Image (cartoon, rainbow, N blue to C red; front, side, top):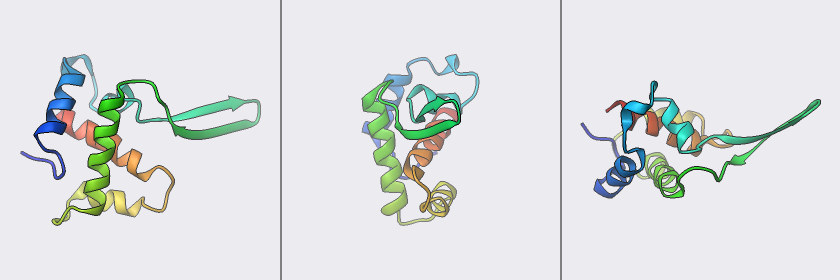
Length: 109
């Protein structure tokens, strides 16, 4: 099985960063481990969702973000993740959401 945009270097980066995949109960937790989630600042009535957090492994975060970018812009054959990402394209943080789903997909494979 293969994922469009994921080559040997990205796969090796993912495997070496995750190390022991059984430590994740759910595949969705891998995206949170790579810190592909937005920072939140909450105080009283204020709730601000900001940019992605800089915690976690930066190499894995950058690799997954680049694969999401390639999947949304350069992939020739359409696939489900690409279509989902293009529907979200107008929303802020769509590429990060695709990268987070991609992390879960790679974990389940």
